[in-house]
Length: 134
Image (cartoon, rainbow, N blue to C red):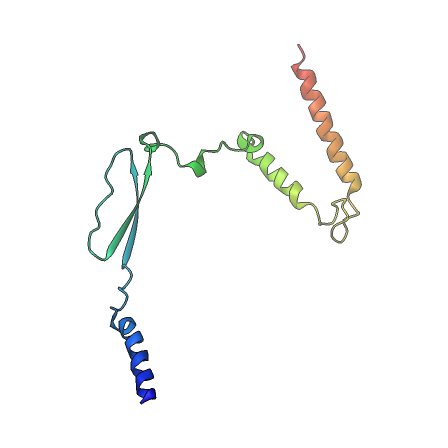
């Protein structure tokens, strides 16, 4: 008798949990929309859709997106392709033979070439400065 009482008590406690409805299925479609100013958020097309709205100010409507607003790097903005390729080659030079670095095999070679490149760059700068003097 005692066992039946405990089983009935357990059934009485578990009955409300069993009587609950099964959880509803998640929506089939989630639509993200950006609205500006006082625009209304668009209505869902069906009952199985959720619309999530992000509200921005009216002054943001025709602006370039923030990720594209940063000005380009000043060093490469007006540089020619030859200068860009030369700087890319200079960056890749480390670790190759004739690189005058401790990285890679043959890195110790090329120190004289590096010194000459620096000297020619310095000389070009000096000549450019002298041309600018009136």
